[in-house]
Image 1: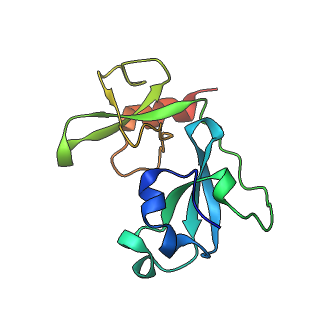
Image 2: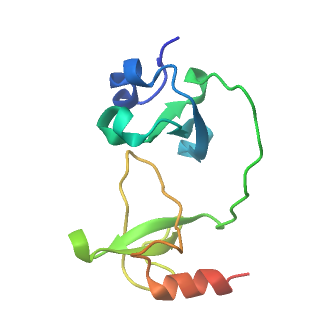
Image 3: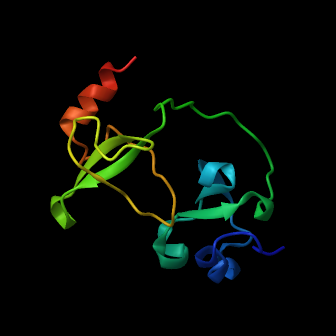
Amino acid sequence: MDMLHSPARTRAFASWLLGERGTVASVLRDGSLALVEFDAPAWELPQKARRWPVHWDDLLVYSVEAGPVEHQDGLRVALSGEGREAVQHALQLGSRTGLCGAPVYPLPFCGLSIPFSPSSVRACPTCVRLTATAP
């Protein structure tokens, strides 16, 4: 078994990741990648990272269990500010302003869109309130 289809960073650490057990925590890149959370403690994994993007063709799936369904209506994370002062905003796809009206920029992460999490410590309080009251 090999990681022929996964992103380059994942393939670089394939010898450490192959054979590890884990759970698909999220689906990335319009369904082409799985964000796998490995069961091993972080200190046993490369770069102490428990979650790695893996292509579906590189996975050996033993069982399928339905997890909680999260409906965020396509809201993604966007930032305002920089560094430690950055604030996470809810961003609708195709928009350049957060739900609160603040000018924001998308969060770049390997070309992926990260879903907005209202429970984040740095989440904009206005965006959190607006997502909670949205139908």
